[in-house]
Image (cartoon, rainbow, N blue to C red; front, side):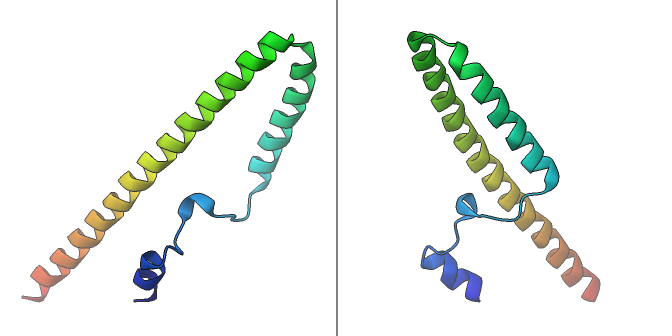
Length: 93
């Protein structure tokens, strides 16, 4: 039951995972950085402020969406396990 202890102690934080990123992720990140580097110098100061507001809103939406997806996925996994366990118990009768 080590995972339950880790969960209780607050050591389980999926949102902070630093897993290995694949080549597709690294390329997308590199492309985003290059586009940002090319784009920002073309903006006025007012446009830069508005762009930052937009990016902050997108970050917040991403956090909320990630949390919602995690909760849904966790519940789905639990339902699958319940179905497997119930089916196994019925077949043993």
